[in-house]
Image 1 (cartoon, rainbow, N blue to C red):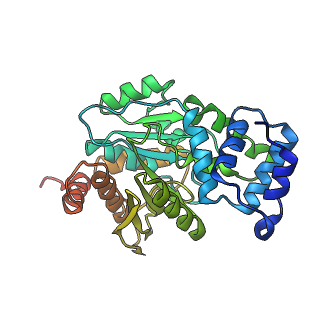
Image 2: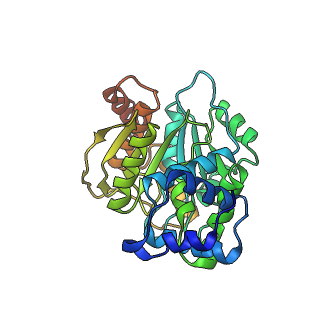
Length: 327
């Protein structure tokens, strides 16, 4: 059944206090049309701005996610390995170094398959893709190539247009509209492994943390939820965020929020400087910030690499233990 775009915009476009949330089925139909390019350009812009002002309800997010998953190219998880850790990278660094590639490479060292999916460019920010390029890791050109990298024990980076082209087109409209939209929120929920992966979902605003918790409680899907660093899903090296495991509709806090210390970080945030510091950290010549070590442990435990969190924390500490120079 064709939707009346004017009527729909009238419902969702009355502002933060007067707008009406869509039911899951209407949200599904609307977002499916958006992904398929079936919404006229003027009305598409109106919908995206209206949703930006109103914010997405849990029912709307569930409808959006259904539409996206139906159109998404799926990946097969490596056999006999822990659950793949899925790291959505859609923000990049603006004021502090992007340590997501370091987290991904430490997870691979721990024996966890790791998929980063995201954008190649992000309006002047330093993306994970740019840092990985400096480290000699190119984006996978297809889902099959990403699967091969994971099967070989390497991390994989998959650009969003390689597995969710409709989402990629909506994300690209930020350049014209000037603001992020619902597609950006949705992208952080995507699991290309059809529920077999473990997404690490990062949020910036407290309201979205509540909404994401409610979303996963309703869906029953598994994820790690935390406040990210400038929107990227790695722990702030200067301040330990709360990290909670969402599983089977329930929430369990694995790490409490706390003040951090004064970590040693790259002198600059550009891709080359961050990549060089990442090499040193992987070689244990630079100390890995403690919040990142705890996040590494959370991922290992939640992905099934270890049987309990204590074992995961011991493994994480062992993987980053500094090298003691020989006398």
